[in-house]
Amino acid sequence: MKKLSIHFLLSTSIFLSLLVLSACSSAVESPPQSEQTAQESAPEAVEVPELATARVSAMLSEPGEAVVTGHNDLQYAVFEESGEGGLTEIGTLLAAQVTCGVFVAEKAAQELDMPLTGVTGTAAFDADTQQVEVFLDLPGADWEQVLDLANHFRQRCPIYTTLSEANSVDFTPGEQFAGESGDPAVVAAELFRFGGANVTANGTTFVMDSVPPLDGPNEELNPLDMMLGGLAACSAFTYGQAAPEAGVAITIEGDFDPSGVRVLDGPNPRIQNIRVLLQADQYDEQVAKQVEAEIKDQCHLYQMLEGTVHMSVSAEQG
Image 1 (tube, helix red, strand yellow):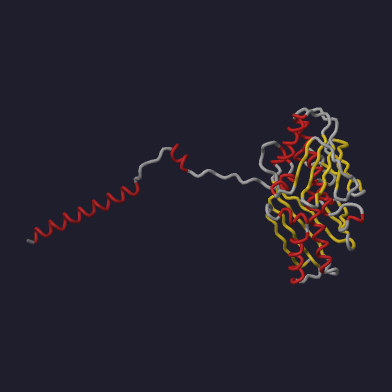
Image 2 (cartoon, rainbow, N blue to C red):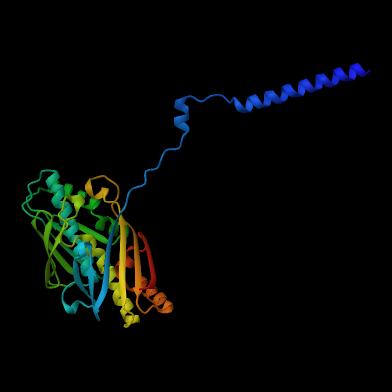
């Protein structure tokens, strides 16, 4: 009986050992995948676009007037009321939109070898619809070429693509503006050299430049300087009304994909994020929160873009 029990125990141990070895072998030696199958099963890498950041700042020079600083420390004045003459918050947006259209049309005509004899444009703000209306006159181009240039404008101008997503812009290609050019809510632009335009707004004339993605010189104020500058000025006016002695400085940043400006059918170059930073020498948290709410409620550009651009407002001690 003892021999039988020993044999039985040995047999059981051997059997269990074989089962364990078999299980380990199955776990380790899984069926090999072919190289092609492994590549197919690997998740595709998502290419994240490299965004560029445009930055402007603004400070009150006196009640109702703000000085905006764009790239290369270029400065211009924005007035709270149109009766002062010069640019208002809406005027800066119009200047940004019309020059962006003129510069894109100019570059696209060069790429397509179109014989334009000049490019002029007008942007107007319709207070009833709260829309920017854009008119581009493209002498030297036939109707088919006008439509081609209009397509470039609609895709490659970051100001237009941003406003378009917000349903805040209307574009009429190949026509001149028929309204009153002296209206404060109307801005006109005319090319006088490659990448340079004379801009007229509310009785003031100044020069704006095209940007590097369009081979522009970018030595003068550019469209993004203008677009973001209007919001910066409005933010400064709002803070100045709430706390006149606060000593406020505004910084605004906007992120966009410049590769979409360079080519047709590229990525959408719209402005994706806008950050508003309020800095006050005499900082009061309660006042700052009040101003943040008023900027969202009173500044035209903020209201236009809030639904389509990621907007943020923050405040801190200056």
